[in-house]
Length: 265
Length: 262
Image (spheres, chains in turn orange, yellow):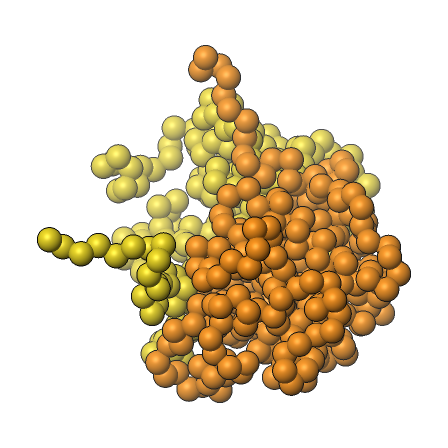
């Protein structure tokens, strides 16, 4: 994976990135974070496993013709974090290779912590803990998989969702990374891109935290806001500078396509 | 009487994955046959690096048809993509219906080179293909042409209303411009495919590059006129007659086998 940009401007306290998931919840949440905090772009990542895409200025407020590509890096100096946005899917079958490339890059750049935002398919949910939305997490920072700050924020360990039955190390995924392809794991969570990323980062000694919420395909703006708020509270829990008003990116104004053709009436 | 399972009270079956889910761990490397990398076959059998002032890239049928009608162009090389069948390709001289990618010099001193991309590049080959192209051609500026993708365009499209948009790299935007350039692609719409791979590469390498996206497929005149305007700064381009070539190519678009049975 190749970095193009100003390496000196990267902030290394944490790397925040989305995992490809149902509803594109992680990607939309990252869009909200970048747009609201006005994060400047500092570079690009180039990887052969990411399908290319280009567009015009996704954040605005006015489209200035600034070209956006598939993977871009933004920074928030106040929180000392770097945010990676991934706008397109991967070449089929290359999730593992991509995760390993990204983890290698993050390790080489000296990032201390990684936060991965992802949605989970609510159609595969086993248990409902309460009537409202709930944030789940999984962390590599402790042996028992618990994180004090996450617990204080009211998040639940993803094992409590009832869906995750495997031990912490997803053995099939680990084997696949080592070139051993055996029977496929029956656990839904272990087959997701977020898990490939989590395992890759953990394997390289980085502290990684997955922040997850259940959602379905449809209008995922509320899910994105929920996930972005969770991430925002995580980074600002000490200083109380959480975001109160999210700034909708310019590219979201047409997220549901063209308006209906009224001439037919 | 058949018993019916109750999805509300009974435990789900052991596995409820969609087949797509399983593909995240698919493709055992030992079962995937790697294909050879693309390569450039030079006409004179002499490997070289071209250094034109402008590289034109036609990714869409209208752009390839237009470039085919530029008179006097000289075939320099072909970018061979292993795995692409050449059955049906003409032997005498490349035609707009061939599945190939040919590099031409449009003027006498190779200051303007055109690549007509007339085959489908598999997505997993985009990255390699772009690098093979730019290893062979080192231009001052790049102008690529692609068709607007209806599925990625977030506004209404009518086959009766021609449209032309542009996207540019930061290096190109930083230039002072005298030419009339088409409006930028509306925010929220995107372009993918090999044209996006080229523009992304140029953005990351700080090359001066522009992508023109046109609509509909049958309209060539809009593209030809814009090409004439955007290349007018080059002395070698003034005699090429892009606008005339676009007129000459109207109505001469070949009918593909698929379209015969539509």
